[in-house]
Image 1 (spheres, rainbow, N blue to C red):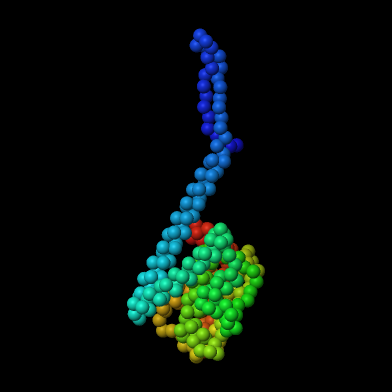
Image 2 (image 1 turned 135 degrees about the horizontal axis):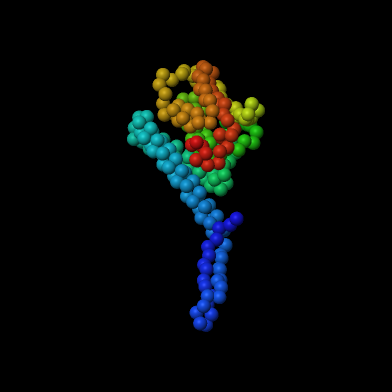
Length: 241
């Protein structure tokens, strides 16, 4: 089957009698498929724009709410949006099909000047992330490093951060185990109230699996047990469903 458009005309003799008909048929399949692709792309772009604007709005409002001064709010907003923008750049280079966990971790390190530091180590197998997961991890890692610089392991010269992830088989699906662990910093005390950073980490990662935040005195630990399938969704509509 194919899409087509056509026109039918009568063939007449010199005295006006109908002797037959002529049919002109044009194959419009490629045009129709192009129109459908354009419709899907516009739908996807709409999802991306809505999600991006929602994230920027949340970053802005929450940064002002938790800031001690206007200058502090401006710096926080600029840093968070910059981290989000870097993730967008990475995805655009990959035609918005996704990227790897290692690429997102490396971009975070470079963005914060930690790419050559032995105090920031990351390791794990090649794991593909869909666009939504890549953006979420970019924001989360930026927030974790920022908090580590202010209050955690990176606030002193002896502190270190170790990031490790692995994939394991499970009944019906594969799972990603992700772990962020700080050590060598000031003694950790669990916060009494959840700040914007904690809420952002939980809300960003909870869509993909179970998030656990631990506060032992030796250093903050974040664990994520996530569905690899959910992490690798390619479109916003899939992720939202």
